[in-house]
Image 1 (cartoon, rainbow, N blue to C red):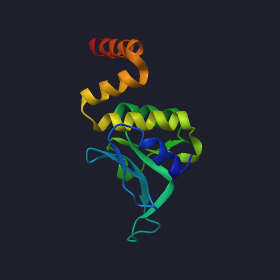
Image 2 (image 1 turned 45 degrees about the vertical axis):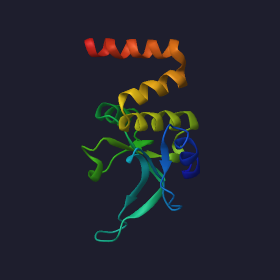
Image 3 (image 1 turned 90 degrees about the vertical axis):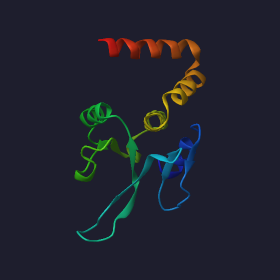
Amino acid sequence: MNAEDVRRLGVRLPEAVEGGDPERVGLSVRGKGFAWTFTERPEPRAPKEPVIGVLAIRCTAADKESLLAADPDKFFTTDHYRGFPAVLVRLDRVDEAELWELLVEGWRCQVPKRMAKEFDAKEFGAKEFDARESDAAAEIID
């Protein structure tokens, strides 16, 4: 996957917009970023430069820990991102289905619950949506 794939998939999400900078990706919804190109300093005190092959994607703290533990070659963090609800993703190590799922979850972190529910109902259909909602409710109760 590459930056163009991220843009193509990201703007399919309701109200998602792309920042328009050709040198980096910046996806947001209602003014809140959910995926952006990772930047790093090549040397101390140097200006940050985009690393076009690495994407930062919003996620929950629990999801971040799970992803980091599951596949550290694909997912990582830096000191700057420690404690921040986003995971760094090496784009050349994910396929389209996995990237889509990560983008959806990042988008979901930034939208109102009602908007996420409406998306789920359209994307997954009412029957599967009801099952997902029941599973989520069961997790909260446990």
